[in-house]
Amino acid sequence: MYEGRIIKYYRLKYKLSQEQLGKGICSVTHISKLERNQTEYSSEIINLLSERLGINMELEVKNLLNIKQRLFHWHDVMINELSESIELINNELEDEKLLQISDNFNLYQLLRVRYLLLHKKAKEAFKIIGKIEKIENKLTTYESNLLKHVLGIYYLERQDYIKAIQTLKVIDSQSYNNPEYYYHLAIAYHTIQSPVLAYYYAEKSHQFFKEINSYLRVIDAELIMIIQVKNDGDFRETIKKYENLIKSCEICNAPDRKSKVLHNLAYEHYRRKNYEQASKYYNDSMSFKNPDTSPYLLSLEGYIRSSYDGKLISNDELIRFAEDGLKIAIRNSELLFIHLFKLLLYLLKSKVEEYHKYLFSKALPMYNEYGFIFLIQRSKKELFNYYTEKNLNDKALEMAELFINS
Image (cartoon, rainbow, N blue to C red; front, side):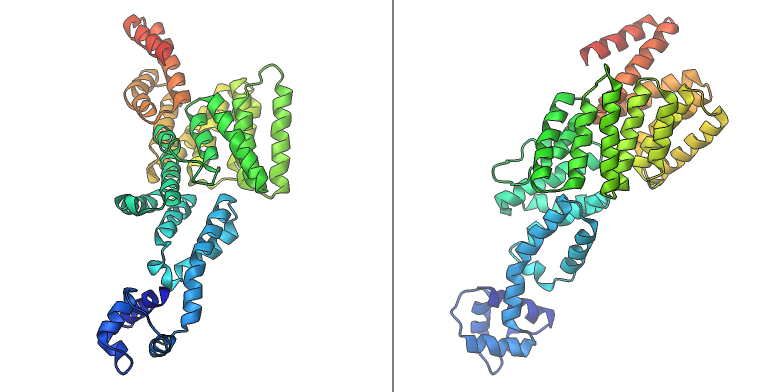
């Protein structure tokens, strides 16, 4: 079954015609039927053809059959986010000659998408997605659901949270035995300010991560769960939960996770108007992040806002921070952060009219398009207050109605 496929692969690789390969061994017709698995063949002929091609057929067949197992192992280490193993297997698979003739080549392509998304290479990932979507009817049930999963992750990466939810929700959990996608649903629901569903899916993913002993991913799920519970009555309990998560990050030597926990702890202080503590934790979070990434920009934006609201740093210094953030956002084509830092600069330079004009005409439409519920609500409140102060009653009423309806 596999011998003919392997013979054809190496024959084409070495640019041999069927006649050249079979000369003195068997006819062209026999080679043709053998390569298409349309004839019986003797081990003697296979051995002679293999010898001419310079291959060990037994090892080649074993290697071809082992590809599926290696691919599923690659998927497992990506779910667990084990960086060294991910890279090791990726390098092995890139050197695997027989992947192209494997029955699992589509599975490899889908996992390649997942790998690229882990490395924030969304454009390269989407090119592969486009090719796979054209042959979706040829995918197995598992592969079809994996396509939906990686496409959902792609939409998360592109900050299109509505499409991410729409895509991930149609995954068939019965035929796709990977509950990790619940975590990605939780992320999407959290971002569009749907705390009940975010907590529900985070809890389901938390159970899965515990079952597979993936401690790093347990931290991820627990963080999402903590964020959803607005325990305003006793903030000490919330702080304790965050401190426990920080300890877990330190035990697991996970600075990237620690930066996320610190960022969210900063936000909890910010929304309680504890600006000094918020500024401190945003700054701590930034210290663990690559300055050329969106997570860094997110913490930088929080740091500037909390420092501004708390009057902790001079405006001139904050303007320099905002200008640096805008440069990074423009360089990386991060539209959300381009809007956020432009708004900050209007705010810091006391350009009140320009701030609200930009907010209404540029930023808010983008927030609406991508479903940034928190930013939408904050923007509508700001615009309502501004229009009210300016006695622009029609516009204030419009904002009030939009806020109530949303």
